[in-house]
Length: 158
Image (cartoon, rainbow, N blue to C red; front, side, top):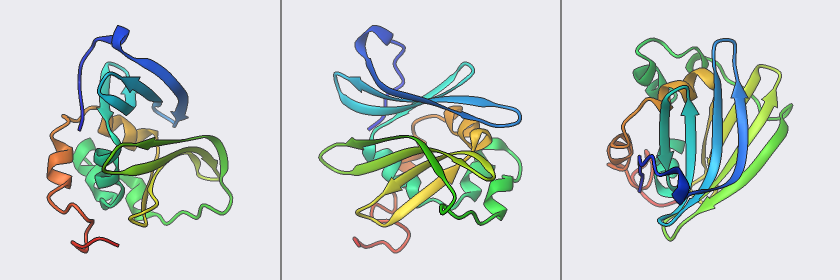
């Protein structure tokens, strides 16, 4: 599901974008590895790589999970943002035999956001550079925890 190898020569960068915030800039890339496509989130020395299934499980998490990653209240979790005024900078899909994900880098009136959408499950999450910095610092085992509810918070397929 995920991998944290440093074998850069085993991957191909297919797409790359940056999410910028007041205190952080995070590089987000769609990469191809011998084990399939991954989303790579890189903030400083921290790197997390996740496949479509891991990202699908992230899409239905409450934004408070990013507060857990950061160790303090995550400001974005207290706001409601509309996608109506978004300008899409970059959009791509990640797929495997278990999940399909759409990833968008957008400029919104509130700043840069990364949108991770699971269209078949009808879930999405919008994250800024601060939240992505917290995500990049996580161990890949977080996706196993998220997958304890494999069909989302309702516990059944949509």
